[in-house]
Length: 372
Image (cartoon, rainbow, N blue to C red; front, side):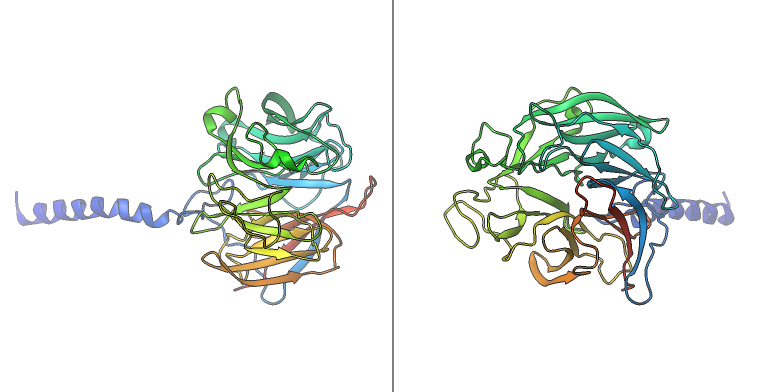
């Protein structure tokens, strides 16, 4: 073996040693996974506005829209509380037909509520819906194929239903578990009852939500009506917002096994073993569905954005660790009641209004964040 052969072998060995480092460099940091349908290192540049946020209407003619989830192809499924699922196309047009008509009891705050797309949707086509029936609130797994949703199995049942305080938000965490927010159904004692699934944040592993389902784990308890939650990019801390009784709307940092006090305490009251909120809103703003801005390059990146119903705004919270450093209203009174804010794979924010009373007045608002 001559010197040239030795040099060639050394170069090959060096390149092989660098491959794992290069692959690791393409991986997103913890809590900053790529949007649906994108692979690490293949992320498209997110939409950003060079000045003020750019606002447009992405869809009209909705009837009490409640939640929204993007599919890997860039389209999105939108739930309407009376029991319809609608499709928002990749070019931002709302389809005139329905993807599904779901059997629900649409009474008061109940009906077709949360939606979440399986982390492995590209291979299994699973979509999950939180819905109110005449017997209870439940989570059902569907399969999306040929532009239609077909039911597969109810995986969670027995969440007490009522005309108020049903909760209903469902999301997949960085741990790939399914998280479910529930309300107290107007019966405050349920939030502390270990026998009840109400007034809790629940979670379920993949083996259960893709399998036969069953009783979920209680992650936290002592909630009045959880409406929105998301995981902070970089830290994977779980933050949630919920409605208070008369004011005292809350934002909390959730930790497994903790008790958030309702109805034993509220507001700034303290009691041993019970958690107090990070911030309160009095008068009430009725915080609802929320998202952290995870995509890079925005002045809002890392902020928690909350849709507010009574407050008729989007609330922006900035953090230093777990400490809130900014707490301000965006777009106050511009769009009316905001049910949820969702970050799209294009980096824009999508907000669902909740102004209609059973007619077709509601919209999907697209907001391109300001460049950071």
